[in-house]
Length: 120
Figure 1: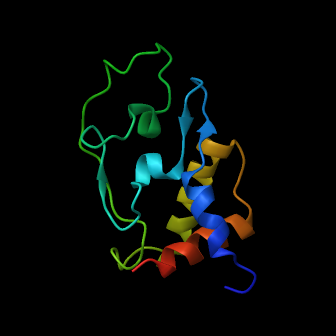
Figure 2: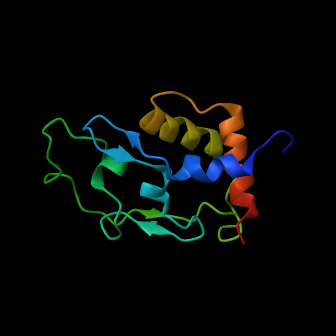
């Protein structure tokens, strides 16, 4: 991708962003510190609020404990990653909105995708 800066993506991926309950989440909070690995909700260290947002009651006790699987982000570990443009845009929109409270820029998206493509 011309103009992409994969070295900018690694710090972006691990940077904490304050969410509505005052805590910090990063891309790695849901997608694993190693983007070549899968992650399971309610099993790994992933915080509940990463999937569910902060419930109105301030408690996660009433939320069913499902083992939601987050497949690896790196295409080297998940050959289907970044093959469906609609799906990629949907999840960038959702996740950037959660963490950044805005859409990711095209440069941010390109940086992240380019960095993930370099992981073997």
